[in-house]
Image 1 (cartoon, helix red, strand yellow):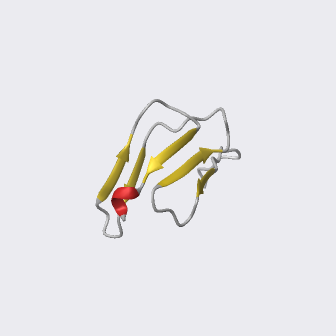
Image 2: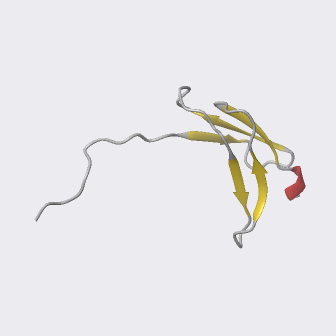
Length: 68
């Protein structure tokens, strides 16, 4: 029996700060070659509460003030 697997894969690491936040959070992709194209934030029941899409960047400032 053959198994389906891979020996290599790429992981992306992001940093989000500050936590907690009341107005803006900064999201940074640690691999500067990768870009953030969109961000979707969901509430506890799965409803989309923030949709952010702008030009691709490795750093995004996200306004979270509507969540307060």
